[in-house]
Length: 270
Image 1: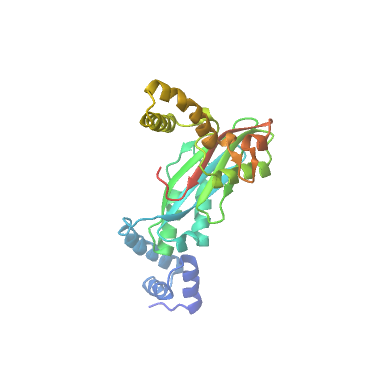
Image 2: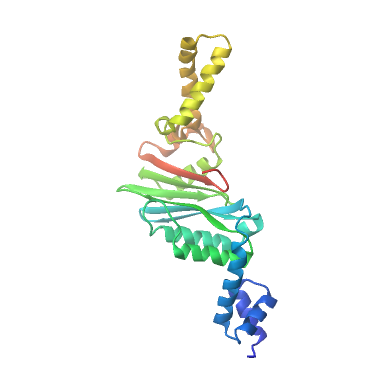
């Protein structure tokens, strides 16, 4: 059996994040070859990880990357909040977001390099970690991106804007989207998904009819209420979270247009 030092065991532990005894046993099996020992640990522990892939991963973090006219947003899942707050887990999420910048716009299928990052995190943490979703966006001429990830890492917003928008302004808008209630469903009332609008209109009509109004009258009454509804969930019409006397439209000013935004929260249904 090859001899190896405690320093080599510690080096392997630092590279893998695994217990000292596991590292020592792997080095013994690999005859002191640190690289071979690391490969042995990865092969063995990845196999164990695969058997645990049915465990729920309800914690995690959001990561966002921006480079020029490209942006990517990523949701990484973990089983526990402890792992989700781990520096290596969060760095892995950011690395995956950075890698996604090289992918085509739209929903991104994890690449082998991204998968390798997840495998490494799973081996290190012993948890069922996974990439929940990745999306890539492009900005056209005169457009740019802004972002904000909440301090707990669980909510992130990517804003796509046009015009003379500073980083600080886009961060302010992103922070508003993170904290706003109700959560904005579109930039303007025209952007709100038709199924959301129809569901709300139907609910309001039924309420009016239950009070004894004929359908024709109820439908006319509802239109006024729908305007208020749109103002509540259309981003630019919402009272600005830091100064409710102003709307988001007032804050961004006439020289800036919000083209789109993505607001992601860990664990939400997609």
